[in-house]
Image 1 (spheres, one colour):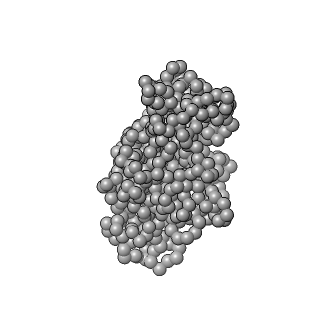
Image 2 (cartoon, rainbow, N blue to C red; image 1 turned 60 degrees about the horizontal axis):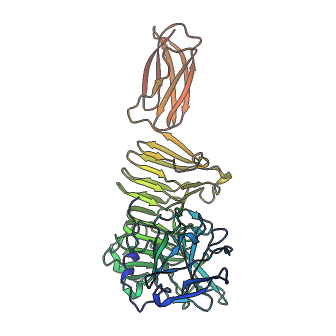
Image 3 (cartoon, one colour; image 1 turned 120 degrees about the vertical axis):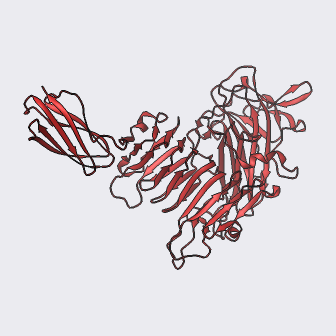
Amino acid sequence: MDRRYTVFALLLAYGSSAQVQLPSFNPADTLTMPCPQDTSILIRGYQGWEAYQTTDDAWYGPRDTTRCFDLWRLLGTYPYPSILVDQIAPGRPVFLRARYDDNNVLPLSSNNQYGLGFETYSPFGFDTSPCPGGPCTGVFAAVRIPSEDGVGTDLRWYDAAYDDQEFGPYPFTLCVPTEKFEQNELREFIVSMKLAESQPGQYIQPFSSEVQNMDQDGSLVRLTEDVLPDYRTGPFSFEFWSFSWLNYLVMHPGASYPSPTNMGYLDFAPEPNVPEPTPITVTLGDYSGFNFQPYTQLRGALVQGSDTLRHPLTVINQGADLCMGWEFVEVLWPGGSTFEYRSGHVDLASRQACFQFQKGSTLRVAPGSTFQYGWNGRGMLLMSSEANLDIAPGGIFDMHGMLIMKESPGATEPQDMQVTLGRGATLRFAPGAKLHNAFSIGGRMQLVVTLDGGTLDISGLSAEDRAKVRVVELPAAGTALARLIGVPVGDQLVLDLALRGPGTVQLRVVDAMGRSVLEGTRAVAAGTTRTTLPTNALRSGQYVLEARSAEQRSVVRFIKP
């Protein structure tokens, strides 16, 4: 896998001491306290932290009352942050949780973006497989905001899996956008750690955490329509710069409460506007960060003089990190729009983070690029049967999450999702990837992959999901239309008919005197089709088979014994 990066992780080490921070692991914050699970046992802890395991491996599940954890040990006279492996139930995650409650929260500023980082080390590595509540090894956070009815509060949940390939000091990293409300408070911060193996006498160690305030750091750019002209590079193009490690946050406009029924849009308009739909290109520069407030989307503006027709939008990822860690975050790509991957990373941190490509939209992998989509079974990709997956020569689409296939709205008959892999294009399903068709009509949709010189690898799918894939291999240009199977022939002529597109093939058998002795017609699909002609009525001797389609003609000689 290519090394990934998260822009805020590059900045965490330079946080200001004036910034809000998580509870620390400083010597001054050590204490001896009763174990929360068994108050008859005293443990070594830190002010503001607790550690526990659950009986169902979900951080919010019933606590295992048989487990208590020391969070530090003495090295000489220095209290060193660590958890002894012997105290951890093998094969299950241990949770380290900041002790926030309704009256003890971490205030966050509005319309901002925070980077939450946590660092620790295990001598045997961590298990990053899924657990019931999210990643077995990862980080969870919840921001408390006012509820939509204005009476109570709600929580926005964010999570991200552990990533030891992260370019930066923190393999546990999470990007958290705050919203327009005056009240934004960090209510939960939980680190989940599941050991890849357990060896008595070893430690998970040390612990450190960081909160990066992007606005205070000066790296945050709030994207609203009034600032878009600053990034215009032409009448139909925009580029978000790739210097100074900028983090762009797409803002939810207006006063409405962000929700599925109150979506916010950042509209990109040409200058000057034109009356016909014209593609608008948005380029996301390398080493920049790109994030969305909840329930926000990108789209093309209305064409001149229309209140329904929009310009199609093409977004090119030229190296940016798209951070999608919200509990359920879905970026829609409507008809005519395109997302083109060249480099960078789409961090589908949450299990339910999703790109949805609707009818007429395109997901494109550029020549020579490898798009790692999702990781370790996390991240979803929803493709309409009438959307396009376009992998260029030399491009690789590495699917790690769940590919959801369904028909376009209004469809009444079952359809399949069609993908063609040209020469040098690769579609690969990594271990843990899933193929989901339950939302299709009758749950019958298949992924039909046409190989035209490309490569398909479905070894990472389960046997059940592999059965949802149908492969059509096109013959190379110039391949003979007809090929006999078995010479001399018996009571039937067995032959393969190779076409690059569906069509009709006329078959005719001619004897040594030039007389037509047998004829037939076959309707064949693209690829190679095996068919037969009865030859039991033919006398012994030499014959010629002629196969003719609209574009090709093949002549094959055979002998009837």
